Length: 322
Length: 293
Image (cartoon, rainbow over all chains, first blue to last red; front, side):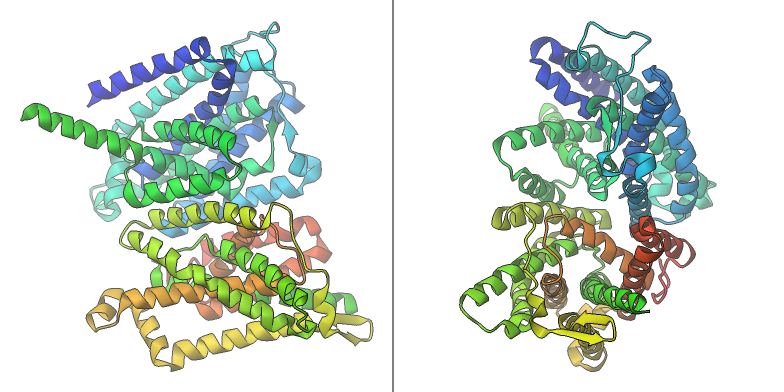
């Protein structure tokens, strides 16, 4: 299985790496949000898929990343994107710690509602305190340098479709490798154990509360990094990024791809980004179709796209054995 | 003095509408254990259809004082979307609650565009028709009679729901199913039909709530996703699944909103979330709910 995953990842990285070369800049630009979401969902799925906690307010950490970038780069003139990423990751951890302390005391629907309430609290703060956050017009996220390089010869589109694209791809691979280590470490095993049966896990010595909290904080760090990428691309951080419907979209991507597999959420982010773009160019009523797709996935494909791939692989194996 | 009274009445009016929607949410959660994110969409549906029906009726030359009955009819008619949606939800009753939540989120997305398709993207409103019932003036305090009628209607609904749940046979069946579905089924309750009825009733409370609010404020596409959060705040504060809780929660949320408008407008919606979080942390079962599991 590890060999197969490694091959899929290698093929995926090569394919994504070819996009700016082969396709018009539009597509590379379109895929930047995908990288942001994919990184955020790696973290989100540690919480949902591996730990069994469904957050309906996770977009608040994406908002933290985008607004963090706006504050650090826009108001304080920090021009290095790496410093900003480290800053928002730290901020994500610091904010997630107290919120997590309160939220992970609950599981199931109560955890979902509490995170939803915190998410909307953040939305209200961003929306109402105009003098601090710019209210509904948001805050500007200026252009930053990456790896210390200014790329002054590039305009914004060229920067996004060229250097920044590869930068995000590299960041996704890096974050993916780290997450792979996390979920395949004893820590990851603990999370899966307590997700299956918290009582039994506790009896076996798993510190359920602490591990849930750790998963929450890690997922927030990933969310903040993803949010900073989104902010860089749009050049703006606005309150809609933390709205509960945006959190719903994160869950949507995860379930579409399949939350019971490591790569599923990334596939879901890619599928939804492309699908949404196609639908938006065809019809103004793309939300309806997205909703119908989500309903169909929930009803017929609870394991998502990864479930189809898994079934296909199993069938092929059986056929090969026969 | 009159300012405070006006705000108080405004808050109670808001609470009355909130109660209707939240009661629908409670009914569905209490019996079916599903948190229905689409209740806000039902509310918006009722609001839009209310405008259409009233406009139609006025064009037919029906007298303006029929406004309230027409709106009620509009709300009740729109409850017809309940049974097909319940049929859809039936596919996930035995699944994890995250799937149920997601399916209702899918409904929110779909409703958003159905409303846009039928009624367009611009907000719609009825121009002050609710003043047809006149205003009650008391010193410098003045309040549209329509608002009082809606408050009375919500109060009556609360009374009849509690009567229905406590005193009728069918109400006992509902409560038995809510308490223990498997046992109720074993004793011969047709749980399928109970679920269909409960969901339709829940839908109706949402659509009627939406229809009643529309003479006083515009119907817009955003109202679905905004109102569901408020209704959700109400049920959390009152206690998930508890009808009296919905009443208390709605009053609290309505009055807090009205109060913060005077005291500190920035705090309006913030205050509600702070209370929701406080309740979830210190009394996760809500003010009047049963112990959480």
